[in-house]
Length: 259
Image 1 (cartoon, rainbow, N blue to C red):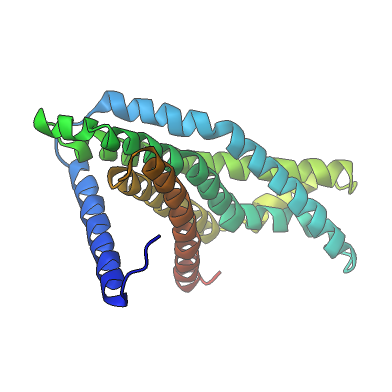
Image 2: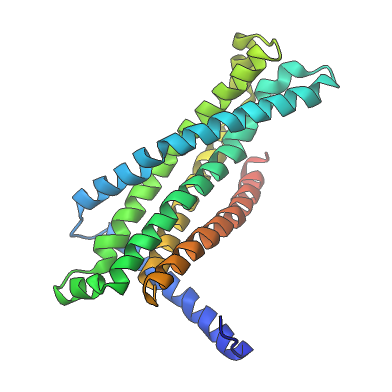
C-alpha cells in the first residue's frame, strides 16, 4: 500500500463515506419504487438464507452448549444451577444469537457479494448494464438488501431456538437438570424488551452486511487481485461495524426498556 499524505488519506476516507452513504440511500429508496426484480430477490433469499442455515444452526447449537456448560459450572458455586436456563436464554436472545449470526452471515455472504460484484466490475459487466439502460444498484444491490434483511431476521430466531435447545441438552445430560424446569425458566426469564432487542439487532446487521459487501464489490479495482482485496475488506469492515452497532443498539435498548 503506497504511503500518502494525511490530507490525501482524509479526503479518500471522506469520499468513501460519501460514496457508501449515497449507495445505501439509493438502495433504500429503490425499495419504494419500481421496477422490482423479484426473481433476483428470491434467488438471493435462497443463497443467503437457506445457504447460511447449516453454519448458523451449528454455531447457535454449540454456543448454547458451551454457554450452559460454563454457566452451570459457575452457578454451582452459589447453589443456583437451576438458573442455567435463565442465563442461556437471556444471553442467546439478547446478545449471542444476533451477533454470532450476523458475523457468520457476514463471513459467508458479505465476502460473496464483494467477490461476485467485484468480478462483474473488473470484467466490465456492470458498465455493460449501464449501457443497456439498467440501473446496477436496482438490479444488483437492492435485491441483496431485501433478501439479507428478511432472511437474517429469521436466521437469528433459528439460532436463538437452537442455542437454547443446545443448552437444554447439556443441562439435562451432563448437569442432571429437569428438562421441563429448564425450558420453563428460560421462558420466564425473557421479557418483551429482551425479545425486541434481540430481533432489532439483525435488521441493522443485515443492512451493514448487504451495503458494505456491495459497496466494496462495486468499487473493486485492479483485476483479480483487487477482487481478493475487496472480499477481505468487506468481511473485516462489516464484522467491525456489526460489533460497534451492536453496542449502540444495546445501549439504546437498555435506555428504553431498562434491561
